Length: 329
Image (cartoon, rainbow, N blue to C red):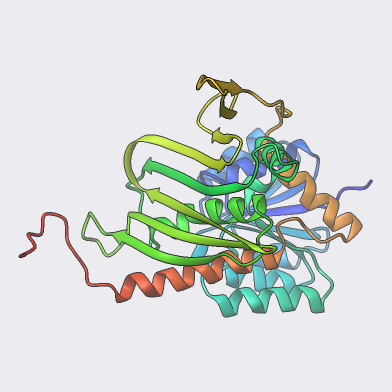
């Protein structure tokens, strides 16, 4: 198939990975960023691509049929909307937007103009995650009793959003996908601003995942102040417990079970060793060519934005407790 030509907007820490993957697949035409030094480096690294610091020039470029937005999340809505209005298919890094109404507007605009709108919920393309999804649907774990996702790291490069907007989209989209849940609901929220800079940097969410006639409880735990990186999903079933540890180089997915004698058995299911981002970029290009709806479509992105917007309101309504504050009994 003839690949569509893509422009990547933003080539920072994550955007440069998108540049690499679309270039490797022969679809990259233009890279746009305000940082001209980054553009100079990329133009030398990838021969044949054009670079520009003008987003408007990308929009007016008739050779570009798709735009990939990898900029700070508070700019996603504006850039995606302008791209759709100019007839471009759009891939937006997570989250789709920072406001529920904006997410709805983007979905309506893409539908009205028959354009692809895809959200960068990377873990739905992770081979180990898809292996685990198959194992759950086949009953390998038994009935799922509880699911928990821990995503923690040390990050002092703070912007203007909380740790939840930064990390929780991965957890919520992945857990909903595994459990075939379209509309997760948060039942309890906790969050702390340990640096007293008005940004929540440690948080947890208790979440209910309705699917069919069942509701599976779960929890998301995020942190920007952990010096040891943790990226771990635990799914407890009546027969086996699955642990997906994405910080490991190999055997990321393990199944734990007890024999009748009480001995712990660990299994290592097979999954293809393919970079998830490669698969995600490939899927976007395929959707642009065929017109099929992306796995991580606007509806998938909408529910993550809806949950996080609700959580943000709950956290802002809570009384603030500063680090080191002494509470009277």
